[in-house]
Length: 203
Ligand SMILES: Cc1ncc(C[n+]2csc(CCOP(=O)(O)OP(=O)(O)O)c2C)c(N)n1
Image (cartoon, rainbow, N blue to C red; front, top):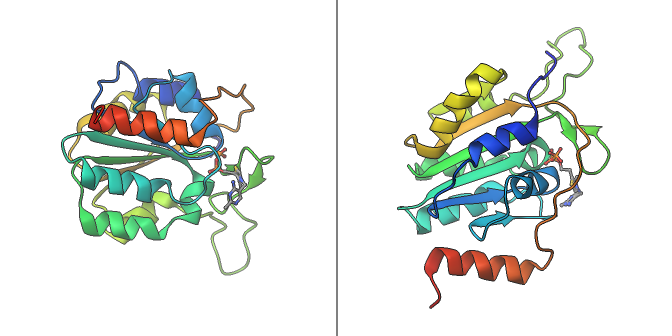
C-alpha cells in the first residue's frame, strides 16, 4: 500500500494548541524537525541524533510526571532499534503515555535506506511483508494499538494521542518526503535545561 499522509501535517495536528502539560519527545532526524516545524517550545525534547531510546525516555518521563501528558513522536528506524522498550511500556501501563511512530519505511535522514517495516521480496515460504510495528506493540502487551493510514483517521488519532487513557501506540504510515529541516536549538544541555525548567519550574 502506498502511503498518502504527509508527516508534517500529522505532527502539526498532533501538536495543535498545546497546553504546557503536553510534553513531546521526538526521535532523531526528521521527527526532530517535524516537531520544530510545528512550533518550537520548551516542553519539546527533540533527540537530534540519539537513536533507539526515544520510547524509554518518554516512559521515564510519563512515570515521573503522571499528571502531564507525554507524547512520543518517532520514526520506524528509531522504533526498530528500541523494540524491547515496548514490552516495558506494556508492563508499566502508564495511562499518560502515547507513542506515535511515523513509519515511512525508511531511514530518512541518512538517505532513505529501507528499514525492516518495508516489504521485502517474497520467498516461497513467506508473505513478503515487512515488520508490522502495531502488531509488535500489541504482542508486547500494549492493549490499545492501531495503524493509521488515511486522512479521515487523523482527527481521531489526535484525540487519542492527546487525551485517551494509555499507554496507546499508533503506527502512522507516512509518505517518503524530503522536507526542509526545521532546526531546534543545537545545544543539548540547553535543550535539557529548558525542558527541565518547563516541567519542574525554576527551582
Ligand atoms: C546509534 C545510531 N545509529 C545510526 C545513526 C544514524 N542515523 C541518523 S538518522 C537515522 C535514520 C532514522 O530513521 P527513522 O527513525 O526512521 O527516522 P526518519 O525516517 O523519520 O528520518 C540514522 C540511521 C544514529 N544517529 N545513531
